[in-house]
Length: 624
Image (tube, rainbow, N blue to C red; front, side, top):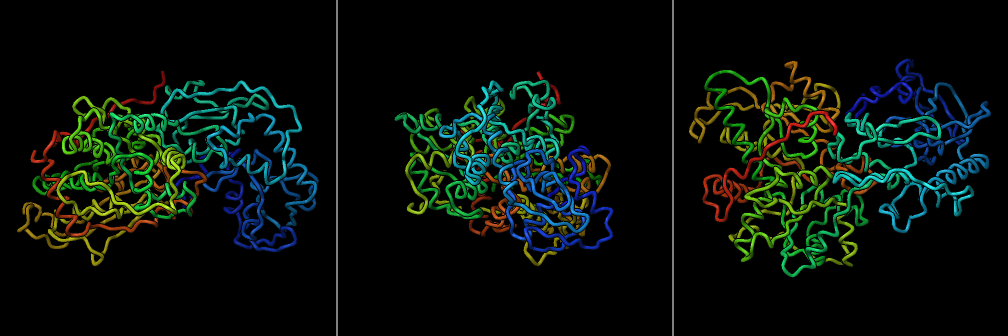
């Protein structure tokens, strides 16, 4: 088990990381390896590619990705190993004894040059109009190795082009058969939409039964898109719809930004990963033509209050009857996770929170409140949501995402799509002035533009505050546990200590000394383990609430963000935001008052307490 959060040994034997096997049987003695005349001592089982990377020697590759298991099928990373006549794949060669390696000899350069030419012979020459133009790994390899022509006759490609789904577009003419998408979907996410079918020259990457994407069991996480080296898999582009609305004089176009989108958007505009320029982005969006820019953090805060209320009500019932429910409340904030449950665990949807996702709640607030106070017809408001993955596109298009006959979100666009719009507008991040989010409500709002890393931590603070009457501060020792010894799945146990019976929940005094337990799970492969643990009555079954996020590193690793992706990139995005369990007091008081207005009918407009909730569609693993 590695620190990424999924078990690479689950993959077929033919695709296992061979170094993992060698390491298990080694005695811990280091092995000396020479790479291009430089020596390094490595653990037995370390691959040649890993050893070269430690020395700062770059070996090109196309099928290898740090998030995925090794297959060694592109052969771009071939090297010469002393004593062996044939070239070997550096990514798949486990070092078990001292060897000498050459990585860039004349022979190797010729072979790589021919391999790239062969790939290009099966690739359409449409780079100028390609969505990955300027960010394509195959194109970068050709440029780096001086491949300026295709020595072999370009093959007429008739492979599939599938644009039937809002979740992703498959253009198999651009596929290089690296199998990254297969490994991301099967091994990393354990969903299994695509697989390599056939043998030899007849190999194709297909869905089950070669069905169109609209008819397969796909949760829309977009990890296959994030890990594809070319434009064989891309996000559907809906920017034309947004431009049309912006150019329409009868439309009032507004957009909402979530924290994960803000940090990845600057990355798509050429800044280093983890750069936060929220205020400049707001100005760029207004210059692009958006009439108002809203902070999804407002809806996040309201969802936290609503979820905390549900949890505390459940705790009150527990303290009254003395029985604890078998299943914790499962979160409903991640659209990919919701689709995963609808497909893979429809019988457990009854344990899901019925609260809308922040995106949908914000869309409902905008639809119900914005037009009234800004003097317009609700149908004239075109509501756009910038989202971290394509699952939100499907959520926005769902028949369940409708309030009073109107769609909550008219169009959901990914980070990549929004970056494309900003670039086309001519606005430049370095030259943009600083702006502020628009107020959704006419009366003064103290909401800041500072996002918070984890919605779960804010929820912990809200529940703790409601139960104990105190703020959850750093002085409270929170116990973090990872029952499966993998990152991305852990439990937070928060001691309650003495409970102030004078605050608004005196019946909770019976819970004195009992800890609050919150779980977090990132990645659907981990989700399978957690759901099974709950079913068996394991540690996660004792949690009061568990937040599930479909992607590794949550929304910071969403499939709608710019590529490339990797652990360091996702970590930089995550670390851009501080972890906090409490909002500033002024903001907290304002949110509490606003939440009360929303739930007791005092909020002007058409919003009511029922608008906090949604439903689900039990689908099961069936295809049409």
